Length: 463
Image (cartoon, rainbow, N blue to C red; front, side, top):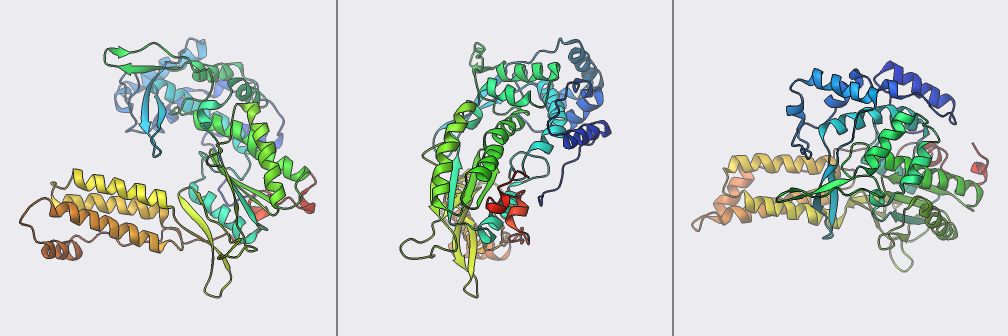
């Protein structure tokens, strides 16, 4: 019921697990640990990022690969005998755009390998259970598919109100007992459950000048930076939000209700304002059962749809989702059209990064700078190059060219502005804006796209 490709495991034995999970949605799997074979550990090792930061032991993927066969064999023996122990992670902090810091746990290579192998097993079960409205951190799904689904809903659905939801520190607040209770509905393998509990509670150590500090146990939340954390978060959010919203709109909604979620960011579209207000209150109460809470500063209800004028009093408002601003406009024939452009905050943040980069590397050879800036621009076009966003792409390219020229002029006090401008415009030409995602909304009914997301009279019975 979705435009996203269905994920299929590589291992034939795991495909049988997926087929069994699809055939019986209520079955509990009691024997899964025997799929943690040496071949599964080898696949997990090959799937790790080569340039990922090292854990507390300083081991990288390249250094662990020396004597790989022998190491994986010993790891497999420890898993079978039950002597495998998770290692406390190294805690670092990354700066966020709002000035706060995001805690990241850097794990040892062996923990990453085992977690990736467990994720491969659990995906066979939960990719069947996850609803099609979820797009974050799932194999075969991306941000652009979520954006395309949302635009289809806004363009073709009966939408008059949009509720932009954001969870407060989702990864840090998940209740461990509630998480394990959700997992045990489908998985009853004691070894896998014991491994998951180890990874949740093993904690971390703060890095200090004289080494590492005392181990801090993690009382709640999933460790950010761990390989298994995105899957565990999706399991909780699928139960706390996706399934709950689907059941609520079947039983209590007066009109159409649609949901598109990417990780902890979700956009719900409504036909009636009363449904939006009632669902927000009920959803907040339901999220508390899992230790989650809505971020009231970022959660807001917007007027949006064809029944609100694009200008004047009571006009449709705009909102941001996955770095793009959605707003109401008109096509060439004057008909209702959902338009998108690069969000102002994202555009400003990316330009500031370009400005800092140009200042830092302005004394490097000009040809090298041109190549590096071209790579950055192509990466920007690859994500923001959606249909109708040409003006924002052109603005980003012009501002990048402008910052680059300003920094190059400060390399010398005798440089000529007209000569430098001619050199950048004729020889070192930055890549022109390019639409890399020409597809618009999908040629299907939005209810079909999101797995019968519609909630009217025809959708009230349980399907």
